[in-house]
Length: 518
Image (cartoon, rainbow, N blue to C red):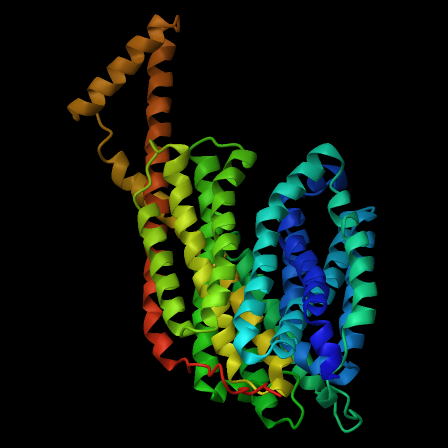
């Protein structure tokens, strides 16, 4: 067994990264193609967003169950089943004749994809000895960052040049190679080969997990659209979320073989690491949504140009990750995370100063600073958080860790969308107060605009209305810019607030095997 491990260490890495990259790309690849799907499937905007939502809900339900499912079915068999199902669901998504079938197959794809990342991380954490785990997570992180960088660009190119259906068909060859490699290079460790006949299925846990994660995702996705708690729909789902979560915690702590092992949270270091990852997910996903939105709605950038602003940040992360992985073998991971959080906060505070006169590089370089910060957060935080977990529980632990990152992301996106709408209204009201006939600056701007419009051949009566509407447009854009600036400031504070939690993380020992050493 150990010989197999030594020979295949890097082959195992490539094998588990293929399905993980496929899953990560699929999370972001469909975003760009939504307008095309809408046209070809004859769906409304709020209906077509279910293509994204259904995938995320299924993903959120399966993530925390990964460790339990690996024990019940055997990890290799479960991983191969997930890859087969994911590839098959991709084929069916591409061939969907209508929106209902596309959403159904996306749920299947999300459920199969949910387990791919935690299993891949668990296998990597076990395959590499303690002093090389940082490098293993760095390699995995490069794969994980590759998805968000390549996903939107690839999705846009395929949609423009072929058809949106090909964003799903492209998974077929990757899935096939991953299945073949998995069959040859992945082996179940001894502790997972034990008889599972004594495992009683935790039906209540399963039901409550589906209910709580599904309702939570619904509340976060539809909250702003439905005006949050002014809607009985949101109130209903919020009650289901709270009640099922409380019941889930109660059931899981009493069950002998729980579907999610909440007892892992007794480990203070693991709990602190998860909480940090939740806030990092919150900050990362919300900022990655806000930057392109700022550029496209206020600056008039095209989708491709907005993507070009985002790309250098991803490249910065890719370049720094291997260096961080190497540093982890000798340095304290907590200190690296500390500098990463500081860089993240710095990037957000720079973005807080962005205005409507900025050039391309004014928007790009804070994104590069954020890219460096993320490389210094993800890899060490994963390694330090999972270092003290016994290997039997590694599947459970990686599942919970990824779930909290995803929920943090959903909360971040929902909160950013809500704050943006509220702050835009607030700042517009404040600015409009200065737009009145008694303000000499306003009078001067209005008359200058009117004169230039008349000089261009527009009738005097029409020039007045056009000039006022142009100035109102300028007020709206300024209010929008101020709203974005305020939210970037809040995200920057979020990065700083979690720094004290680093003291609760336990420094992993590089010499001894830790919880998973041989």
